[in-house]
Image (cartoon, rainbow, N blue to C red; front, side):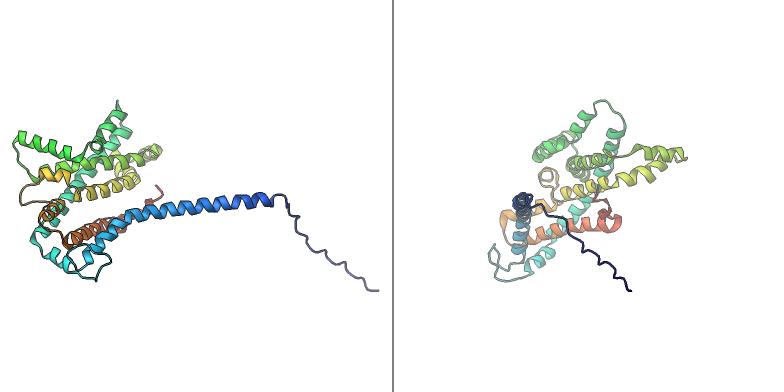
Length: 292
């Protein structure tokens, strides 16, 4: 006699609570609406930021000597005129030189000040921070005027170091602020562990402290370079005749002519700033510090 095995009962799904369905349906549209509004707001902000750059690029590539939209064609004549101009090339190289020296000075002084403020237990540290950030609150044109009057009283003229000092004054706050932001979450126990293992204070600084604060220092250096390269109000009072920076040369050019050369110079400045950030990303790897 053969025995028949009992058939396995099919797995029954858990019963669905139909009373909760209306609540889920009611919550779904507000979430989608909020997400849509959030994306629309971000797109609007990006469009607001990128539209001036797009207009400058169109102006630089338009063959007509005035802004025309829609453009009638694409031409590189204004870039050729820009690179063929002796005044523009001298101003470009001089601005790069000043920006490089300013970046080094602002980075060293700003990072050192931030370390002293965060780690030195200085009395009145909040007042010191406010003083270090005060150039951001004062209009740059007043800073340039005050420095110009100081140089006149000292009878030093308009030297290169005076221009670099003025740019350094207005760029140090960026380095201080970004470095302090990183030091806020700095773990002092890492330094103590290195010193307990026999590392000297100098070796601890270069092998433990500096690599950990490097994201803030590099971010401040990028800001310092870009702000110095595009600095106009301070340079207006401190540049010497024949040694104008790029913004001053553009300002003088606008007094007599307005054509696509201005757009070409602006595009070159934007590309230089982008190349600086890209070079730092390639050399030190900024992407690894994005989480900070």
